[in-house]
Length: 344
Ligand SMILES: NC(=O)c1ccc[n+]([C@@H]2O[C@H](COP(=O)([O-])OP(=O)(O)OC[C@H]3O[C@@H](n4cnc5c(N)ncnc54)[C@H](OP(=O)(O)O)[C@@H]3O)[C@@H](O)[C@H]2O)c1
Image (cartoon, rainbow, N blue to C red; front, side, top):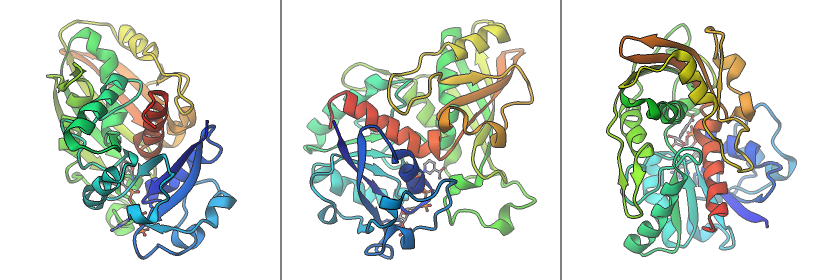
């Protein structure tokens, strides 16, 4: 069955990844693109500063960019992917939901709302049924699902694998790529020959979203995991791919081999955009590296390396592609989960 999809914020860094990932998708058919009023009315080719590593699909290049307004999007679009700035999304997404659209969104607004599923299909697919609570409470026919922040989604699968060893506390330092800030986020004068040791709001997102994602859903609400997470987030001069140094305190005492095995064996999901294996664990302690490893599993796999014991548990490095697994790919996977669960 073909599903007609649209992209809100289609001209940006994440919007372009959506277009790349949706090209040749087995069931999703791209039917609408929106952006700001400045881009509306232009062909996509003219409106977007295309920078992903494959050409703009020919049919997409000639599509006309629409206003980001429910009145401007065809009513027969079944699913909207949102990659709007969160300040814009906070105003605009509710209008689409009230108009009956189903939205799979990257934007950070509402990720922690009690009735909004924050979902990684391999980790907490059951949380998707919060949509029933959301529809009851908000009285809309549409549905909103969020994927987590790009730095959170890189680490949380590894924590889910560690949970069986009594996950108590996590300290993490990130080395985040410039594309994570969007096109106008970081200038070359700021980042070349430099590291920026602060990314506004990012630490808080890692600390809270991780607890919600690892929480348990009882059919009415999510009981957040009580793991303490402390994050320090840094912007570095790689283009794509966030690398993170994780230190996890555990109540049990697994060997590094046990930890690597738990990560390698963590189950995946049978959805079109999911990687065959969720986590790849390197024995080589010099991996993963952004340039070499961000495209593993078509950018959807989490890479891990350098697993070592510490006095309180383990430490390791993990890496994911921030605009694929960390943004557009995560949202497409949530769209596939929505379809599989009959929400479209
Ligand atoms: N980049 C990442 O790695 C990443 C990862 C996870 C989540 N996210 C989240 O994804 C969202 C998009 O990020 P991005 O990096 O793609 O940003 P971006 O490159 O700045 O793109 C923003 C998009 O939103 C559109 N837009 C801006 N203002 C608008 C308005 N007032 N009305 C309608 N459309 C408007 C832009 O259209 P114009 O081209 O017409 O201005 C563009 O299409 C953000 O919420 C971000 O936090 C990003």
